[in-house]
Length: 59
Image: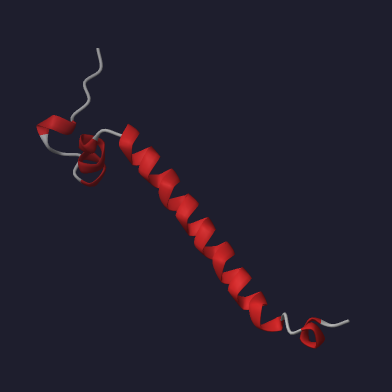
């Protein structure tokens, strides 16, 4: 019996859409955890390596 014959064809797109929503939500949560662990100065220094705050001195 085909999906169309059972009337379930209209729900397939909805299922795929919810899968996408779940994936994006998980990726967003993962990014939040990663950003929470990272120092805000690191973000600044990645884009602006010249300021004194971003200089790295080696012995």
